[in-house]
Image 1 (cartoon, rainbow, N blue to C red):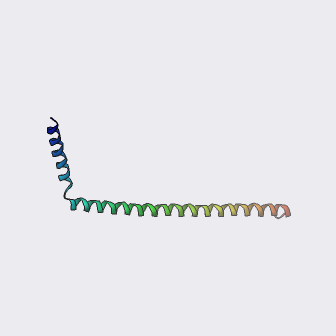
Image 2 (cartoon, rainbow, N blue to C red):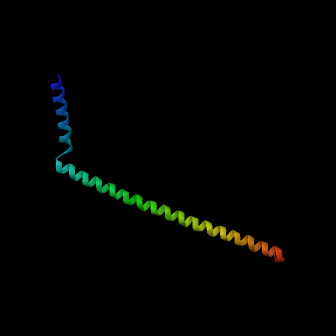
Image 3 (cartoon, rainbow, N blue to C red):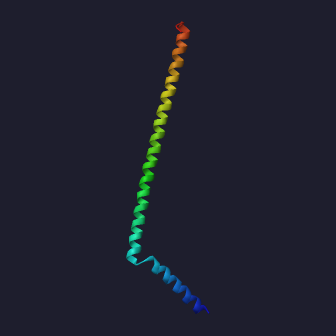
Length: 85
C-alpha cells in the first residue's frame, strides 16, 4: 500500500518538475525574476526620494508662509503703535 502511494506521489512530483522546464529554463526565469525585484527596489527608492523631497519643499513653503504672516503681524503692530495705519 505504501509503495503504491509513494509511486503515485513520485509520478505527481515528476510531472510538476517536468512542467517547470529544464534546469536552464528554471535558471533563466530565476535571473529574470531577480532582475524584476531589483528594478522594483530602484523604483521604490526613487519614489521614496520624491516623497522626501516633496515633504522638504512643503516644509519650506510652510515656514515661508509663517515668516510672511509673522512679518505682517509685526508690521501691523508697529504701524498701530506709531499711528500709521
